[in-house]
Length: 315
Image 1 (cartoon, helix red, strand yellow):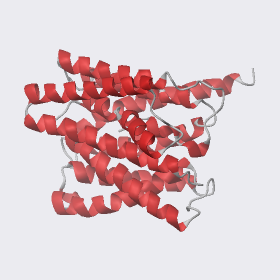
Image 2 (spheres, helix red, strand yellow; image 1 turned 180 degrees about the vertical axis):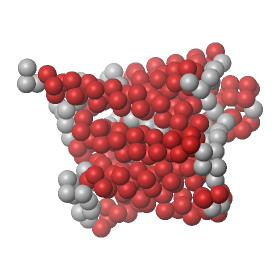
Image 3 (cartoon, rainbow, N blue to C red; image 1 turned 60 degrees about the vertical axis):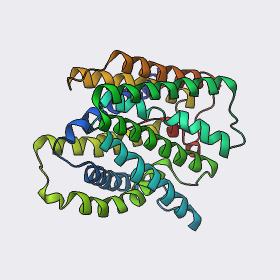
Image 4 (tube, helix red, strand yellow; image 1 turned 90 degrees about the vertical axis):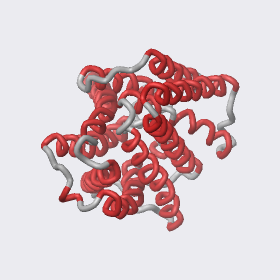
């Protein structure tokens, strides 16, 4: 019986990650009704980095070991938080939240391609190549249907989300190539810090003074939900799960959150998807499944420096 509460806690943490990361896409969509995308991203991660730093003081090492680590964190932070997230938020102005989740789920696909080029220990096998082609075919089908059904801006929005996913994947592979002696929570916090600095400046230039935004109750709710629950809390839960679950099991979240996001968008957001968009989404998820099923389900637990979260698409 002593292990039972621990097992229940693991299941509960995993379920919370799946539900929250399925719902953040709709929270972005709703928040964009009142808040401009660039400043929305910047303010969200200002709050998130403060929360992450606050709960990490006295628990883990806060500063990187080497000076060169700052350069890596800065570059990967720019890719993740200055490129990926603004493109995601901007794209969601024109694309359904569920489709945005599906397009962002291509992070492990792009990550596999970059890993083949940068990590000798991760060559591309034919099974994974087939999965990548299937998933990328699904992306092409989705973007094509967006152009036909929703217009040019929806097409560019979908393409922007996929391009941002590629940037996030490249960021993750660079981190994996050079394992940092820093807890994942602090890696994320430093990436956020470096990524939001240019976003704050860009937000003032493009969006204007944040005090003049339409700060409705729903805008505040979406912002705080994304910053505290969707960013800080979920990353701390993931950090807690790393030594308690296999990498393979954690990566199944990538297969759960896109359908979950589609369900949230349909049930709470009134979103509908065309038949061919759904077919494209199935292609993407099938491709991810083909790739993940080839990963050996060894009983080893995830090491903190391995960053299995790299393959997890999250909004």
